[in-house]
Length: 198
Image (cartoon, rainbow, N blue to C red; front, side, top):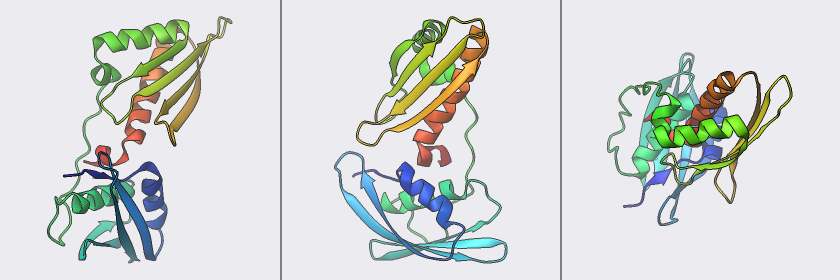
């Protein structure tokens, strides 16, 4: 069975459409077999909640969420993926989503890769990190030798339409490593929008 995933662009559209009323057409893609699946998302906003109805595969599934939920678009993505992958067969929606505990970047990478990252922060250069996603995360780091110890970094994942992020940090090697860890963790989470909601 193909695993259909909500891509980053569709996730951003969900975030915007959660604040509107109307019907919106979307397409999901499978990771392995390059299949496409179209669906329509109906959004109905009420005073304190919003009802999302997904028309997909000749079936209709509904989900009602509070408008105060800051991760409403992630919950929609999880719901849509569940329908597309055959994990949801009722119109009652999902159980409340539990946010996974925050793991330090060392646990994402392992000891050897973490040391490579530390060396990259210390000297600069390029590194490809396999963190269990579809493609490896590419890091490019420039480390200045000036007294303020600037670190400029570019993070990228994907080839055709890469998801990228840049940042600059200032301070000692330990401070730069702390910033790199936080930014890399946030980047990994943003590159897997539907997985973080699961």
